Length: 82
Image 1 (spheres, rainbow, N blue to C red):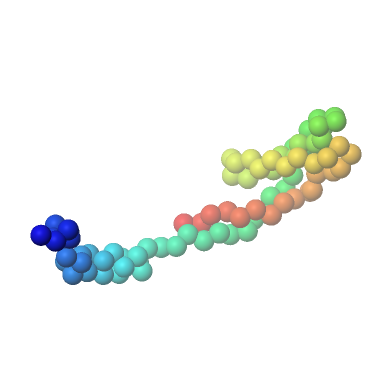
Image 2 (image 1 turned 180 degrees about the vertical axis):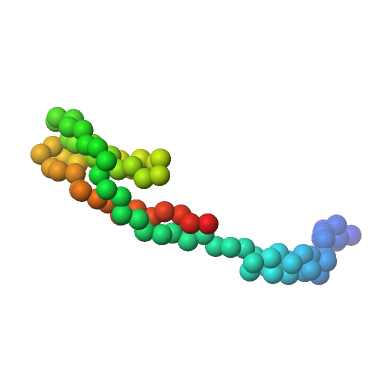
């Protein structure tokens, strides 16, 4: 008795593998788009630095800068497109 006698024959799986490979060609790829977001608000945290808040379409991006530094007037972020 062979130890591999209960294993599935690989040739039975080939049609399924080909189907999955073909379907993957039709799957839309999501792409990223660069967006420039202007500074919305900044808060001075004293010795902890300064919080820079950038809001775009209801989502906030936060950046922390060292004490005495200024927030960038705008930042560039990648936005996922589907």
